Length: 209
Image (cartoon, rainbow, N blue to C red):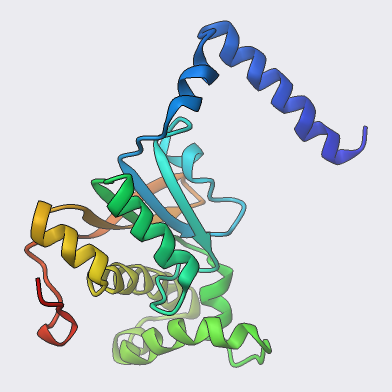
């Protein structure tokens, strides 16, 4: 069997299982989407959002990119956040990184990756800001793991600096912003940081109500 056809065959089995358990499953799912969570994760194929959280279709609104970045010039990401907060009215936004992230490891190296350098620059800047802490760690693996965590925390703080989040915080006190990290060696998620409407960024980044 051609390898891609395995995916189509698996889909047929999945549909049959769903229909067998709940005949109106797809009819109900097709009506609308009402997720409570946004997931901003890494594109790494080993970190599927629904699988690691045990969520079902319709529970997560997902955006993924290399190294789970929240970049203020990324129109794709900003559109996802705007729609999720304004239209879907989500209550939680999760930025999830993972240990062993290739994007973070690439940013830690001095290798020239061409166009990708521009995307990795945000992680390099994070490493520079925390150089004293990172340099004090015993080895490259420890530094990589810590930078992955620091990167997640910074991306959560980037979310808090957007006007769409601050507007929702001011009017409704939502969404909560979470920073998590996934350990592929154990399959476990760990919470690193939580930001709510009381955690406004520095006044330079605040928008008038």
